[in-house]
Length: 379
Ligand code: NCD
Ligand code: ZN
Image (cartoon, rainbow, N blue to C red; front, side, top):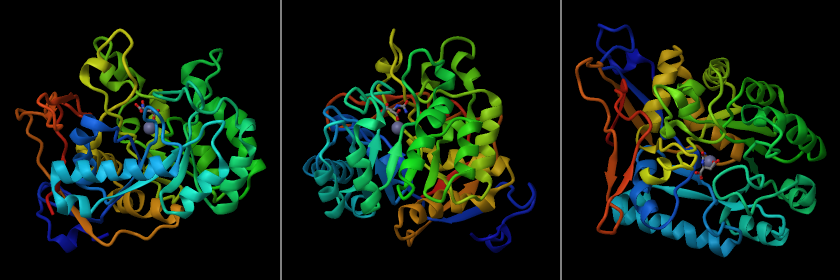
């Protein structure tokens, strides 16, 4: 990454003062929910703006369980992007597809999908852990042949790491998953590449940092910005509700240290998970934070606050592809530091996004109403 001096940035706010520019290798998003139909059409351009590739989660209804379904979904993503952002945007973006593991999924089908270049990885949802996870796996002991096959063919296993045991407190479900399920899994399958997705605890950060080279983790922007107080700030705040749920401040601090540490085991995965406004603001509101519109800006702010902008490129653009065994992206993006205006308007409270129907999709973005100090310059 270029140093600030190479960009001839202006004085006035230190080396990264207002007007400073930060150029990075084009990043990827290693965990995103792009949805389907009108919602897909509304959101996909936000992800394709900074990111060259994205690992697309398969928790649709019905879930993506065959190579044919994965290939058809990939085509719908590219068609929606072409429709909303044009041919050049669609040509510059590669959706990397994932298979949804069920207890009856056929290892041959998985291997075929991987071999044909449809499935980059497979996602493990413990049944009942989160949105559209009912068809997931009740017990890892039920899918030994699938795990053996993935280990043999080098297909990464992406894990939603929370136990579903109702006796376990919701704030402890990730730490208990690591102890009860992840540790034994890594022992049984020492060659299996595993990504613990969207980690939220100091326990997860330490376990991954100290674990084998086959283990890595993604970290979301929201878990770097908010702790669990945000859910109850002045009332019940559904826009900050996601799974795994945000934890105490000490965990957020541990995640910030992990993300900005330079360790190749941690990389960018937004877990951007749009739900329409009325689905969030209901008596049983859906879990998921829509952070795609300002994701790279959000991460840049965290690294900037930590004095670790020199580590952002590794986290956003290098550690992920190296773990997955994929090439680094050739292009670049540039972010510019803006002066915050205490009287200025914040980011929109609600986005009204065209979706190919007559009625726009209304989504509340993460950082609604706030100002962010880094802005992505258009290529
Ligand atoms: C995700 C969703 O809505 O699909 N929700 C979330 O809170 N992150 C599912 C998931 O990744 O758990
Ligand atoms: Zn997710």
